[in-house]
Image (cartoon, rainbow, N blue to C red; front, side, top):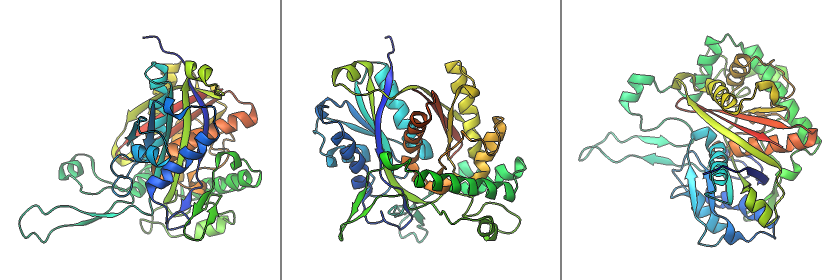
Length: 399
């Protein structure tokens, strides 16, 4: 079967809320449905019954995002019952995975129009209790599903370790000689770039406001940015893993809530409806790395993707690397030969400033990268993410 082009035509996202912030009262399935609904309202010429599938990323899926949140969001957004949905889980890269899979389906002729994206409500992630292993057991453990490992397999611990996300970043900082000062300097740049982007209205057209019950207030801007961040304030924060370590709340991403929806279409669908093709999805690549240094995953994923596409890193005008931790981004950029303050890497700030609702972040990165290309007249964008349990994912766009 001959592959055709897959086009990224449009996208919208909710503001990213702080942990227990403005979106705390919004269910994950309702949150996912909102940008889908608003996105399709922007395209009244499109017969929604022609949508072949809804692909959403979601990492936790232990609470109101259970039972295939993509399908539930499609129905809650008012799509016909004939439109199916599937939820992808590649942890932090779930939203990017959804976009990549949607593009593959369109390129191969197996779909014409796919709504892709992701959602995460980390605030509303529940505690879960495993079933007792024996009668009258008193050994049940209550697990928090907000972030990280739960119900750990002892064999996994023995084979690969079960380092927390913070510990994996600390491992990279130690092994790559990344100082606390360098991490804080990177975090400050992220905040400053995000503040500049907000002030210049760069996110305005990718955001759709959320009306909050019961008082009808509207959340229309990201809650995570801290424009008053200073070097002194970052330096005063205690390290999360104790004395002698370097990861802090200031140089790590937040725990957040949010959702994003993208409209992906084949060449035939673009001509049929018509839709405006804004960027081609050139391809996606994934790799595995040691779980204890999961943050280095974007390096090998990027290498695989560039080899497959026969491109070089300097062929890209915009590079978005998910900022799980400043140490993780710096380990990646230095391995790729990029300066710590490269102007084309996360030019509008990243997850340290904007937030990281796990399943939505990859789709947000693609949407922000697309808009940055359009704003600057650039041609290609690279989006790369690290993934818990030791993976990396990279995806390329071309205007």
